[in-house]
Image (tube, rainbow, N blue to C red; front, side, top):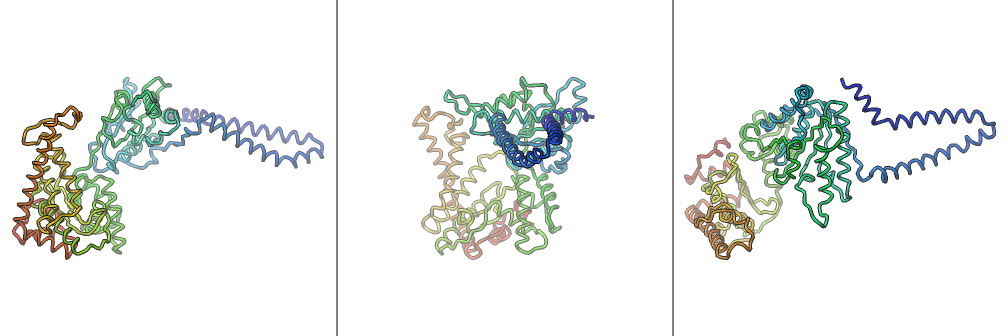
Length: 543
């Protein structure tokens, strides 16, 4: 259907090469004809000098071409982006898992590209830009590849950072070349997809300064705006797909207006069903125990992205190989989850006093989280060093929560300061290991009072948006007082609980000193001994 357009495109792209080839053939013919007309002596002399002449000619040509490319053709803005056929990407919609809502919206885009002829017959226009917004690792690039595969059109990809250079004008020049290439492919094949990853690198709101700051970034963004919907040559069916991890409001408003990135797809981390499908998909790529409970794994991986789950399965395969197992087991996957979330174990030799302090510190976190926290469960407690910490209590949310109420925030504060309280009660003094706990707890309490209107005095509003000089000292003192009030109230609740459950605190500290790590089943069993076993979702998960 497009063979004549493809031929015209080929000639327009390679006419210089064809002309050079014809000229070379003509020169060779003329040279042979001229040599045949010379006398024998001059013919031999000419043939003897010809190798050196050819060598110097080639050398001079190379120097000229190099200088031409660097000086006259913008060598610093050189762009090497070849098109990829849609069918060669081999990423189909069935391979995109865990983001079903985003897939439905993307499928509409595929249908628009496929039915572009019918759309144009009724006077409609194919969409110009599609912006995919979401956290990293959720499949934005993968979904763009699937759109290109299903639509069967050429696909060009480039990262936003590749447009950024210290030389003024280079980014804009690269944008022009990229869009020119995309329009040529769209002319020959009916449409072309241009994918720009990490669009926020060049698409952030423009800043203007009399000192010229941000001039290069502004010029690059301006060129994208012109190419997408401006005074350019005849428009072809070039669909620009952008992907970003940044919030939508940091992008330049001109980039998001109708006619540019006017269609948006919001991609979020998968829910329970999506995570279960992802585990099945990635487990199918490795040899694994067929009895693995995939639903249990999905419940253990709340807030995990598709990339996280892929990484977990790859890590579990490495662990299984290290243990000389033929199949990946649930234990291998569980260890992989802990390694990804908590980090590698570090072989540190603690003194008996350090080990005891750390054990009581982690036991305090464990008990308060198990008893008081409304949304999280304890899946592991350890006094084995990981990263920069001497110990850790591994919490796991029971389900996705997209907003946090006062009870949850207060529980987070109590869990954070529980290590400090336990050390103080049982060891008589505390260690510097409480610094990160205090930082987290103080941050939450400060946010509750200053931003969320959760103080008892009824200070409503977000005081952090008010310039410092416009808040009276009295209000500041009241807000700081309310923050400390929340902090100390949580401290008292934790002290009361740990004093009441002193025997359980001693037991957990003793178990941690002896075993160094406690799994959920062991933790549940100890609470059951004291009649404190919780009837929660985590108990069902561990079965």
